[in-house]
Length: 531
Image (cartoon, rainbow, N blue to C red; front, top):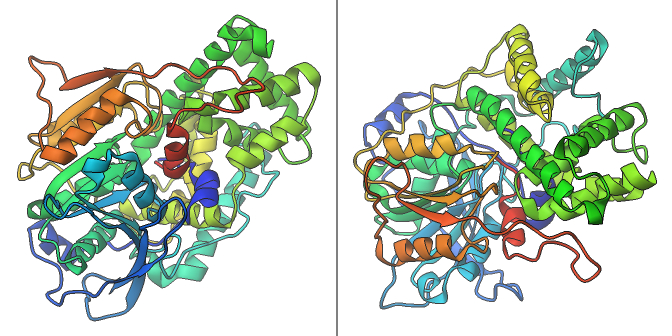
């Protein structure tokens, strides 16, 4: 799926990475239940406390690049830890992952430990980790620095010249990855990342792990559970990837969902016409947004924000409605006052890609392109994307180009594992009904594949990543599960085992309110906009 964490993840955490190989003898053995290498890996912790997280520790772990050859070349994973403080009720390690592929998890450990109720957090060693190739893990992958520098060709390929320019760009990215990391690329995939997790478990001296994953992290967790079902004690999966669609079909589904969220954004602006002056009819507001897109495609705002950069700036609003006030301000300033500075500032905040973002995108592409089949004929991409665009113009072509290196990727694809699992303890899933990045149907699908799992639904919610974001109802279910292992059980034929009302929409910005003040802003910056 399209990853949009590249900007904010780069600013708030370390980002990007390397993952591992495909259907080999060792992977097949692991799928049958074989264990990782017998020699216990070594992990040492050092103090890396901050003012906000005074007990934070950092560590590193050497793991095989190729899990088929445990005695071969090693790579290094970077980890963080907030140790437990309740010795009497210690429940072991809680590994956390913010999504991606390509998202750094080290910064998430402190956040989760601080956001959970103290009595619950005290029972766990909260473990963050940068997956192989990501952030502070070494080596880290950065195929083509500046790949997203402005101003890029218009994503919508009206005319063969625009399409050719975009194709040249994505081919250049795939070639750069092959040139710089050719021998490594076949070791970058979700199965290998899951095997790394089991080496983390061994290094921690834990018989089983607890796991908490957002977004792509739900898929990583499901794959780990498939490979090592007896090593899972508890697992929380928030904003769930459809495991049957990785990754080409999931992206097409995402296009429709993001278009719906963009319409919800326009409707919110229309309800606040007194603030933004863009009209009271959502269709009129949306029309003005597309007129703005046409204008910046012809004359980029501030010389930096063309059509592609504009889409990059507003796509984050599909992940988190707390960004809507700032985005609406920039939109209104451009349309109503012909001011470009707010739009450029919004692009720098929400859309621009820094060095860490380059790393994150490189790993997003490397893992996604290796994980699963992609069409190798550009004619297939073109036809499918134009069909999607006809229904959902907001980001269909932008999303296609974001993933298009996979059409030209230098390694063969793997076959995704079937994550169906009847051997797990109860797993708790969380999902908003209107989540655009991971549409609701994916959570229903995974709930059906994980026997004894339970699904808690935020009804009417559209944000991506819903726990520890200010919804007290959802957080009660989360805390109860982590404290006791109990999950809610629904009745009848409903797919939800429990429901919670969505949080209120954000309010327009005022002089006293510079942004949405909900606690979730920090979380959504951390889990960002990775699939």
